[in-house]
Image (cartoon, rainbow, N blue to C red; front, side):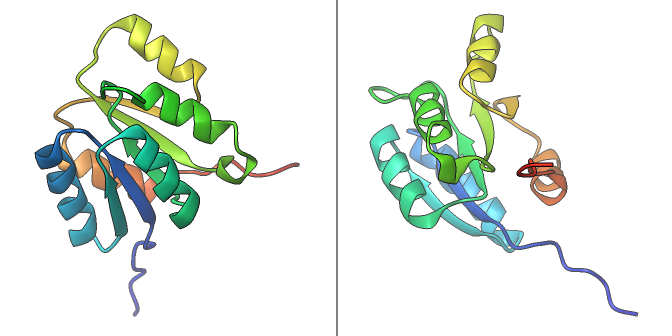
Length: 132
């Protein structure tokens, strides 16, 4: 009997904290996914446009072009309609959660997130379907 392998996903990790980004990227690569990393918002946009990730793990509190702006920018581009955006942040205020919903973030996680939950999230995410 053959076992189903989890789908290999294209994932972009964005965090201005290099250590946090490296650790998350290593976990995701260990799980068999294709992962790229950006440490600031404008680089994240450029990489996303090139690689067309299925998942975006996004720190919100970055200097300059922050995670909210990254999410909003990508959500306004039709090619990213099905992009699954996960906020992985230290921001824990209700206003931050609401703002994340407003810019189209799908899941809001507070750092540090449980690696088993991240694995489950990537493996079980349901992407929105186009049309009826």
